[in-house]
Every structure is written in C-alpha cells, then in structure tokens.
Image (tube, rainbow, N blue to C red):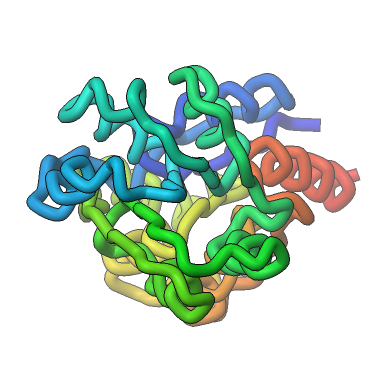
Length: 254
C-alpha cells in the first residue's frame, strides 16, 4: 500500500506536531498553512493584565494565548492567583509547563463544552478573563455572561490571512493534479481561508478524490457551508484526528 499524502492547513507554528504524526503513521505531509497567528499587545490585553488581581478565573483557549502573555508580560503567568480553565490538552500541557495548575478542562474541547462545565459547577458571580483572538466566536463570553459572570475579553493575538499564499496555491494545484490523498482542517478559519484562496468551488473535486478530516463539529460546520464531506474524531485533538484519518484511509484502500 502506498503512503498517503496528507495536507496540513493549520498555522505553521502549530503544524510541526501534526506533520510528525503523519510521518509516524506512515504518511507524507504537505504543509500549507491557511491561517497565521501573530501575538499582539493590545489595549484590551493591557487592561486584563492591570486587572489581574480582580480575576476569579482565567481561561486559555489556545497555546498562542500563553505565548503572547509570556512575550509581552512575562511576570503575568508567574504571579497569577486565580483558577484556570483551558480548552484542549495542548493548551493544558503548556499551562502546566509554565507552572500553572489547571482547575478545569472540559471533556468536549469546545466553548460549548466549557460553558456546560461552568454551568454544572454553578460558577456564577465571578470575574473571568479570556485572552484570545478577536476573531473567535462569541459563544464563550456570551455563555459565561448568561451564567451571571463578568467577562474581561482581551485580544492576545491576531488570526491572519496566510502570509504564504503560494504554499496554499501549490496545494490546490496538487489537489487538481490528484496528488493529495487527504486534507485536514483544525478551525473554521482554516476552512474559510482555504476556499477564499481557491477562488472556485473545489467541493466536488475534494469529495471525489480526498478524505477530508476536521478536528471537531465547529470546524465541520464551516465545511458544511462549502458542501464538503468530512469525518471527525470523538475526541477533538490533532492526534485523534490523524489516527482516524489513517484508520479510515487504510480501510478504504484495502
């Protein structure tokens, strides 16, 4: 059986692990980031840092948030004195590596999953800081406010249109030439930007020739908008996504 060629569309600084997993599972990775992440020191982030002592909880939804805080306010994480909630194993592990204790991580690695946990634990009347990208969905802050909490939103990084469009266009050429066996998406923006660069409807070509695997139901909704057929794992992590990809690909090619 030949090695499957798997396209990785996640940001370059997060793609290394995904590429390593593909190689380890017996495939060949093609990196074409359709999203770039840039830490930024915004007024809202300055405000969050200034109000650190008011926080009852802080929520990290991605590793990039931690990277940004360490870059601009290296003492912030070291001196945090509040409870911590995270979304995702990778974010949790990086937080722990920075000396923090994770108090809450939902089994469902989504904003909805975290809100459900806060509701179960009857967390209300608290001041909660959420440093993240401004382009993130409103589900998390709105849900926490509905539970009676005060939310301090801060922009810690920007989600940018890919700076290396050439890599994505090269990937699209490979898809047209039927040189790609599978493609992965890890956020709605990776989907949106991919199809924006494609400038034409690739759904039929992708559905006929590629196995599309996304990280979970939120990204799946973005693929629905482009009529792309997909699968996603029960646990919304990159390793589980890749395991499902290779299992399905091998079953389809036996």
